[in-house]
Length: 195
Image 1 (tube, rainbow, N blue to C red):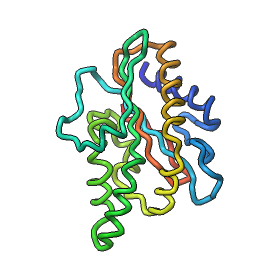
Image 2 (image 1 turned 45 degrees about the horizontal axis):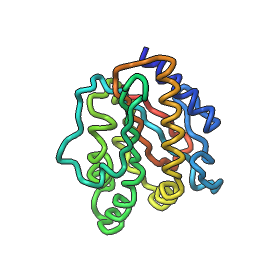
Image 3 (image 1 turned 180 degrees about the horizontal axis):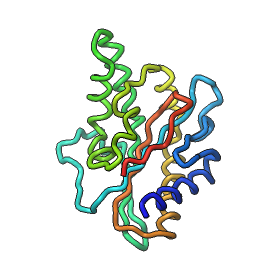
Image 4 (image 1 turned 90 degrees about the horizontal axis):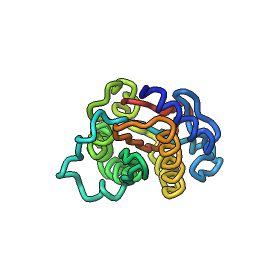
């Protein structure tokens, strides 16, 4: 059932972005991004929460609240979150540049992954599928930052929100669904479901 819901969300996103496979990728022109070959795509990560009762840590940094859009389905009250993780990449890039001898993976984990882990990955049944996002530090810092800057947050959130609401109209669920948006300069990057 969850995979079917995920597939319906993918289909609706495909209607707007044009190119999404079962675990597909968003085309480089999505989100209003230029066709510069160095800037490839955005990686979307879906997390479907197991219960409504899971709450975010109260000790999250204030910045995290500003990158999360929470909303409910108007008829079913199903809860959703869109986490714009790409907005954390400037901090990551700045830290790497100011600490060139420090492990990029450690900085990435501290500046990006730890900030969104509870929303995007915690209790994920298929967490291993997110290994490229969790355990590989992006090394094309300038390209990732350019991509992050060119993503039209409002347009991207509206498209994801519409896809989630339409899929929920077809198949209702009581589970909270979270979509996390990460930049990726890897042309082979895929949408990932960790459920």
